[in-house]
Image (cartoon, rainbow, N blue to C red; front, side, top):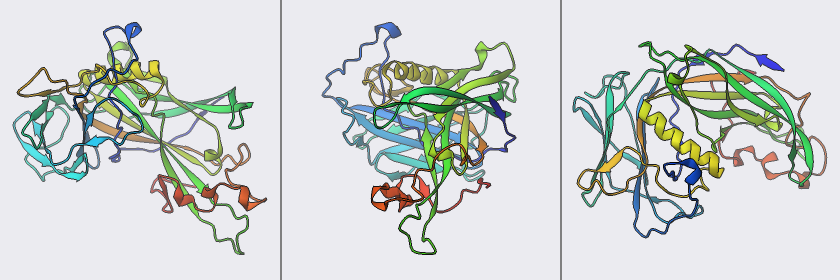
Length: 368
């Protein structure tokens, strides 16, 4: 079954970083070794993105990578001087917001450096010990706006929390978007996803009238995959019914669900980087289980080009497509019990704000 909805397509800011650990790639995927190499020397990881949208800004993450232990707290870099530069030499300093995170909003007309498609940008990072690192120049391309999103339903056996095989319905989301940008060039694209759903606390064992809250919970989806597309490999000007992601049809859809699709433009080099990251992730199964290795980015030590520096800086224009799925109370069960023993209900059923990404404030895009 395929469903089609008409949705608004508005470019809105998303200052949410996709912070992935740097992972390895050899020349041939079939020869990738998944052993974690011993390395006592810290290696710098720089991840940065310049986004052009309703709110334009740059976000940079700085950390060190040593022998990889997933549970370890990242070794963040503080007191660095981080600068965004354009091709004409204009520059702005990016202040540190918290340990390892440097961030700046760039309103139109505020700085000599202007952010717009067709221009190129790079990052400079100077550490407290004087070491200087620079990225290559990255061109910012405009992004075509998606036209529509569809979904297919699929039923298959999955293992539940009790270890039993049960029938589970999945929604497979497909996108339809032009490939040509404003210059008539085929685009390199990348997508990320946020799911937002309404969550109502349980009224079990509540006084009358029930003192229950309704939360709106937003969660990043499909973090274990990199979803990118090379428009130059398509002879058509349109990308039709392209698979983006799938989600289990579960309690999140009881009172309505919004899928926010963030479509970004990439340069060819940025596409190659993310494509390489994606291939390694597909092989290993998770961003956070793959070993550190040889996916080289676009940074170098200005005074020592033999130093291995990981991460990537890219410039992008981003647009958001909101896709609404109405309430499905007749098809899926709510997470919290309506009747029964309150002692058996999960804690979130009595405090929905305990879940990360939860808010009592209804998002401005939400329509019941």
